[in-house]
Image (cartoon, rainbow, N blue to C red; front, side, top):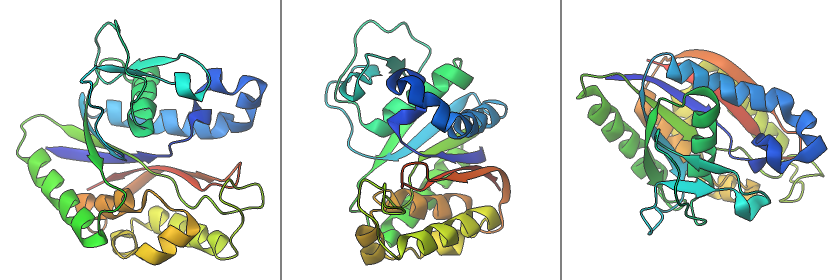
Length: 235
């Protein structure tokens, strides 16, 4: 049974070991993301991860943030980590790190989505995922890894775009209101122009939860010019 969907952003800066002294600058975002994971852990021991990327070919059950500066090792299930795959996609790494901080007993099953998936296809994937969850007798939560625009300020890695601040404001308003129609209708060309690479994940959330969810644990920030959003939607 589907019980909740939590969304958090994907920046490696969530991991304090990767930030050094700068970790203090993102303490509030880190706390918000861990809060979402804690909220999901309170209602389900089994999670499905939705994020952009491709499945690692190795089949290794653990990953490492070594490519981001430190060999911080994480897993998606409560196993002893004996070997790691350095090619894990960032969504799986972030999910594994949040599990280690807030829900070490939880087992996470990844469902990765291609960045090129159409809005209609992603919404339908969300609906099918909901049907899959609802067939289970046990409660299942879905953790979605998604950023907003990477062009929000002049500090942004994608360079400032004058339409990005308004897009972020509208996205935050929709997430506050549980506005699935807004997420389902995100424009492919606009999202590409504004650097919203996780657009299919937001589309999928719309199909997964449907209309009029209850919204909790909301937080928004853009410390380095990228829109970061956290929250929990429950049906």
